[in-house]
Image 1 (cartoon, rainbow, N blue to C red):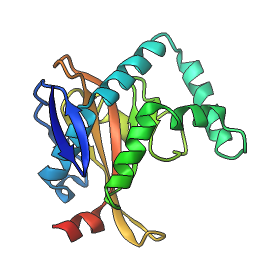
Image 2: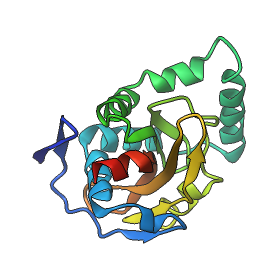
Image 3: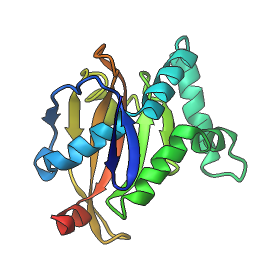
Image 4: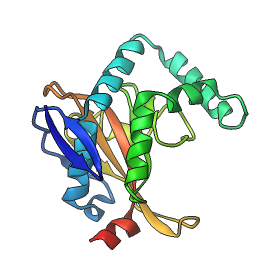
Length: 197
């Protein structure tokens, strides 16, 4: 295991080489290799690897109906005061790590979340509108395609932030070269990225 510093955070990176990225999507030309390498380093850490693998095991036999029910519970919780499922997800160690990454990015990352092999959220830096991403391109065009896959959505202008944002979606790859174990989305502030050069 080697250590490296990313945005002021010391991270332990699994020794296995990261696969070469297959970069696709309408926004693929918007991102530079440095950002992609940085995101890959964040995802190769023990906290991400262990959290996704554990989540995959815990949900191994979960049916499509159970997944739909969990997603429905999450959506309802976004509109109520009591949020047991959301609170449990946002307070887990992976969410704490992702929240810290976002905070230390100084505006570069505006949202981060990691999904398991079924498209369920494992951890996230902010509350998302849904719990299951398996029906969306962010999961279908990364995890479902395989290890080393990157899909970049079309950039969108956020009027509240007054900035162009793009979602960098990547497969979360097993640190031992056995394939994809999940997926992750990093929403990137393109205005901030360009400002940094």
